[in-house]
Amino acid sequence: MKAETIGATQVVVKTVITSKDTLRLNFLRDSSLYKEGWDTLAQARFWRDVISMTSDSCIINVASCRKPIHVVSRSVWMNQSEPQKTSFKDSVCVANCLDSATNLYVTAGKGEFYEVKKTLEDISKAITVFEEQDCDPWYAQAILLIESPGKKKAKSYVGAGGPFQLMKSVAKRYGLRITKTHDDRSDLEKSARVAARLLKVGCIANVKKYLDERGIVYKETDIWFRLLVLHAYHAGAGNVHCVINTLNPSRGGVDLFLQIWQTTCGGFKNESQNYSQIALASLVNFDALVQQDGDTVFLVQGDKYLKKYHRKGLKPWEAYESLTNILHHYEQDFIDDMISYDYFMKRVNAIRKEYTYIASAITNSDKEIVLRKYPASEEHVNLLALELSKRQRYEDAVKLLKLNLDMNPGSLALQDSIDRAMRLSGTKSPVKQANTRAGGSSRKSYKGKQ
Image (cartoon, rainbow, N blue to C red):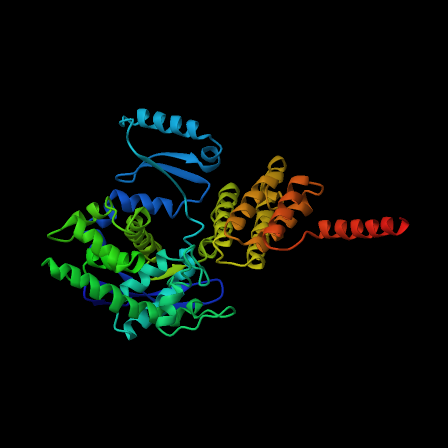
């Protein structure tokens, strides 16, 4: 593994293997995340769970410290009335020996939003751009992980756009072109250059000024300093100044941020408090992703495990279980958009052939289990399609649902699911189109008779 150290940050070069290519990419690793205990903070641990968990589940947590105390199905929670929700929270407090006045939050999983695997190539490119702009590349990696990971054209409810979520006025001020039909903010390199300049001039410089005013000692590579700069990038330097004035700190570090996460001032509210917590969680999760296989990052876990699979030496049921586990990895790879539908089905068919071979060594009574078609059940494929829909991958969801409908013809539930996915994608169901055409023709004929 090639690596060099710049200040407190280690630049690590990794071999990243995708379904189509093998790349050499640069990432950053800051060991002070662990040495200073940022990764052990309850807030960081909490958000690590939230950004890894799908939106089907909610974590009930203590607002003051983000301590998780209960996990509940989102559908169960949302289907309760307000009095029922209050009663539910009260029972959770009692079960966890908490005062009934304890303020609890209910936070839904955000795994569908944080599509971190899609950011790897962008992070490597942005690190280079930031270095060219003489701006700390740590910010490039952190911002791409938390703002709109994997969504270059994303726009927020306040109008920020692109991978660095730049406001239109800021982007135009720094020379980006934005019209009704074109938006430079979706261009990674252009938006990275603007973000780097904005950080240097509007964020880093102001944070240094605020700390110098109070005689607070800092290094620009300190995590707490960098987190303050991230807050300035997200909430505005003025709101960070407001928080610092409110707290009147004499030094930085973890203790300062434990106070910041409990402080509101001006436009610095709950969303702003969460920003640096999510940054810490995202950095630790990302570090785990790129470090899990040493020098190499496998973005298609199914391929990694299939390559290791050897029928020889395994008993039939051991081989079957191994292949089933590999199939589950391919399903997650497909959901994560690391492989296409065609690639997914190609691998599924390869595994099915291997199942057929295994079945020849299994007693007749068990062959049906091994040789069953894929997907295994109507419910199973519906769940996969639902996960795709949550990520707005409606075309892939429809393909999978149609495959299931071929295997379960006449299923009204499946047809309803297909219609819904096609409607969300802006495409009319062929069945409904046919009905509409037939109905239109009939109405015209009826009108003629009048």
